[in-house]
Image (cartoon, rainbow, N blue to C red; front, side):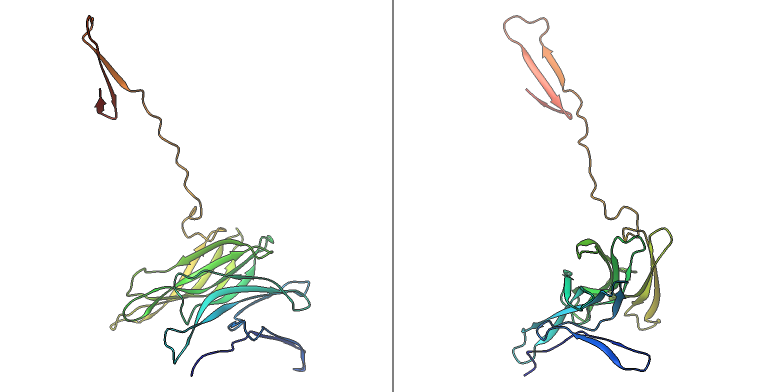
Length: 241
């Protein structure tokens, strides 16, 4: 029976002679993945970008592990300070973060990797993911990217990220296609602004003011009147009487 899995994040520090100074293992029931993205603050606290799993019991004899993107912070004593499990449109067995950096202005941390967003009859669909979290663990923004977009290019992954002098980000990764007569793996570069946007303003909510309405057209007849008067009021060329 393939079930009741144990998956732990293991961190440790060694000295120049290879001796372990300390180590951290996430709880047995946490189902955490590899610590692919690490950042240590000057105070000794550590940010970890990884994935968090759950057992999929669709098959009663073989439970699969399905993952979501996950970031957590340990204080200087390696105690959990906060964590952030990101929603995934589609649970998969490959979702993960690969890199995490601290923003130069102290506004938070940005992690990048990939996330499952759906499936086709033959394979899953994965898009690159870029997510920013505040120093206290609150979500600031979360973006998914793919290029080209389409089921013929089902796999997109971002591996590394650097902050640019203007506060934006440059990222590198790969895009993989299903074409039998081409090179399936292609390099991928992204240049994003400080809000994680490929197109500036992608995170803004449009606010449209209601269009000013012209005063209604009014027709009175007959004019002059005697025993009766008809009134016709028209809005947007639709008269009512």
